[in-house]
Image (cartoon, rainbow, N blue to C red; front, side):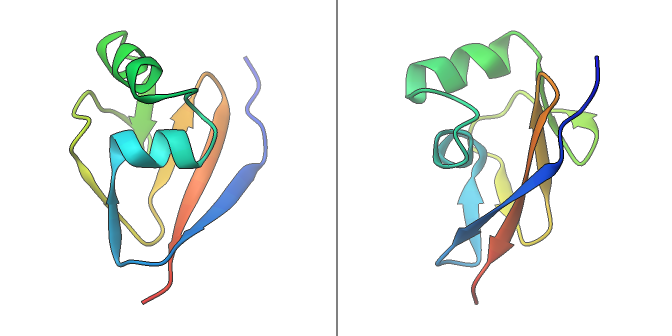
Length: 76
């Protein structure tokens, strides 16, 4: 499986919850889909498997789902 280029997604705050970021970055269709992705173990944060929807992401974190990647850019 090849990985795509990393897409940068800006947020207005310093941090965001993983479940929210999955939706914002178009890595999940909605909250239910985000939960399913996390439960299925296909989400990584900075290369490590993550299953906590409430995990706080900060500037520079990279989230990946099935080869699609997005980097958080916080505007502080």
